[in-house]
Length: 332
Image (cartoon, rainbow, N blue to C red; front, side, top):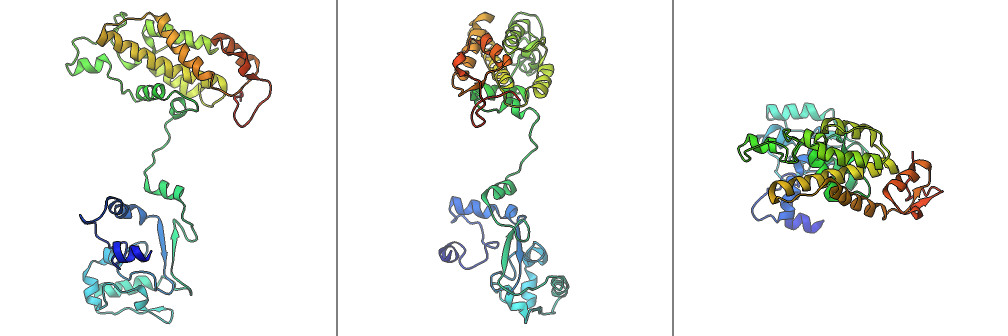
């Protein structure tokens, strides 16, 4: 602490320390967090011996200099590096009254109590204790969780498949309709020969070629529903595939694998003139899904899970009659 005061702060307030070219990368970034940090700290003046009078944010969450400007220091006749205790006498505020700003400051601080004891800095609220998780939440902006988050990011997923699925939910793939609209492609017709316009909604999974793959996977996962465009499939997955019991999990795994491998197959046809039939694509997907399933610890042995195991030709040794609440999969 003494080293910081002497070398980094040079005995000035943390809130007044300038960001200069001489600052190291780490120190510069610490100083840049002050605009966020000031919203999370609460200064409680008591004896005034710990806070900078002009620069620390003890006046209703703000510093005097920030609220009134530098002129107030000159008007007061008080040194720039003085402490708050210089305007406290016998437990009461005692300000010079040589300017309108100082008179206003006196009126503001009348409402600030001065309890006995040493000055305190609280985190977020009075009595609040600093913690790294709370600091992270306060400093980093967080958006509401997307409705599809658990469909894309789930335990024991295949990362590259989930990333491709994430792009699909964001309509991020450069499909032919987009490329054609900017003149990159001379045609926007689906590369799988159905004659329709290639869009995200068509490719996943209205295209007959890709629909046959997805419908086969749905059957393996014990789902009785027809295929449709991405608008329908995404809405269905958000509604039906929440949770991490075995059936939703393997369906999410299959969905991500289908999107990934069908997109790879589309690119191979478009850019490499390389063709695979639907059976070959299904084999690639099944290989990835089965390989991931073999890494599971245990799956609860019930009629539904047994049926899915049979469909995917998974080893029955993974089925367990009991429920290991720590690491196994069970139906909710």
